[in-house]
Image 1 (cartoon, rainbow, N blue to C red):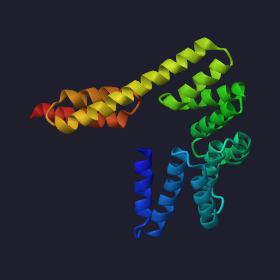
Image 2 (image 1 turned 90 degrees about the vertical axis):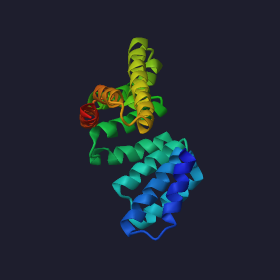
Image 3 (image 1 turned 135 degrees about the vertical axis):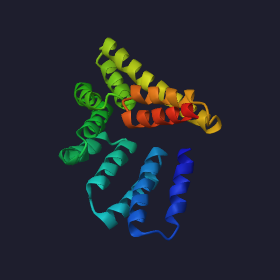
Image 4 (image 1 turned 45 degrees about the horizontal axis):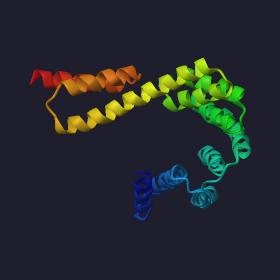
Length: 207
């Protein structure tokens, strides 16, 4: 699937699109190369992006991911510290820095940042998982087990949602499915999505 996403971005870039769309797609291209683990491709495309955009906040965040991909966590942390105060989302910044601290084996600092991340984003399964790993490295097994269980629970609900969404594409008239989806989204803290699915269930029940 990651390779398919990468191909889709490249195909889109081959079309004659407005400059702002092309700029966004070039960011997406670097992101997908990172996801696919293509260090050489990431470096090449990120250098090109830096030449056209300069070292913007978004570009420097991609540099952080590039350094992590290349196994250079010290450089990743150096850039992360430079952009940390500029981050619009402090929780996301704490998560990203916490992951780098974990890469460096600085587990106490990783715990500090990742605890901040999960406090602000309690349904962030990746943050709970990384926090579990940091606690395990510090031999705090109870805390490690608790956050691993939370991460697993969130992932299980997200998998249920994906399954139900496929099911409702086949069973359009079954009001029980949107009811289940509303319940799951509410448990994940997504009130807007939960309300939308509840309205759909009510609409089906009136028919």
